[in-house]
Image (cartoon, rainbow, N blue to C red; front, side, top):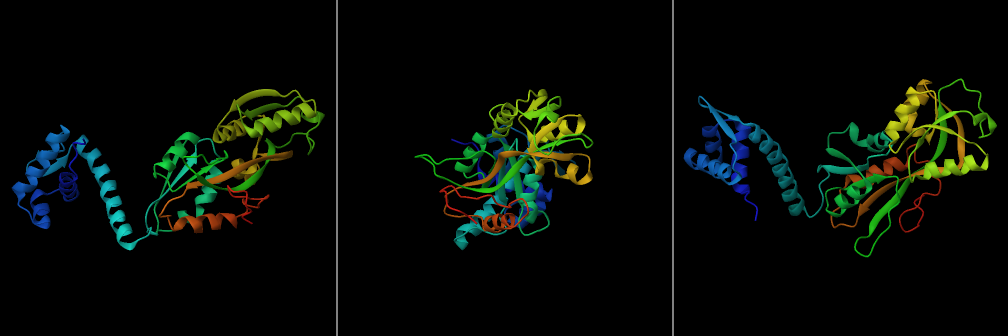
Length: 310
């Protein structure tokens, strides 16, 4: 059984916000001694000191600051829950919680959330984690949506709702000035490469094409994180294979250039959610805005049931 009494926590939160016991007691319509007693009970239950007295003033201890941060979030969400239950639906102003696969392109994520960046109506939170963490967070209702480049399938216990947002062609990227063909041939034979690591569809596609053209690439570095591949490509005279969105800024500035496209090799990007009674009202508009963006130019975009979204 939890030792935390939320009634006591609420009183602590109010005093921490106002910084004055007497003023807070007056606003809460209780006596100062009763308010002080409630906070002492909270401190005793949690075995911490939340306030220190400096003259007549109350200052938060380190534990008090931590408790204050949690209390702010707890009671903000409590207010949202109260409004949600009374209105019978999700609030457009409620925080939208988006999980992102930790190895995904940051540029892609930034493009997806762009409609939220310059508006004040809705707060958003981004959380980066691995695929297993994303699915667990979704099933625990800790996320409204997850962005990933790994396909998800439903199980008997949990049916995931997912749709392919985009399918980006994979390009050969490197510093400008190399005498290379727009198709992979013998001119690529003696180049250094930085490549995705492990069980990765981009890497599998590159390996297959290398075998087809009898290339024996010198692999200088490997990484399973697109942000790291971006840095390695920027800072080394080596070629890399990745969707152009990963190095969009470097391509626009001329720091890097595209030499070729890997034939029939793509990186898919998915939006994943679960069935729930209340869906954040911003989700539909966010997904619709992305579908009309240049990144979602759409090679046979399909949802999790194989039905076309275009």
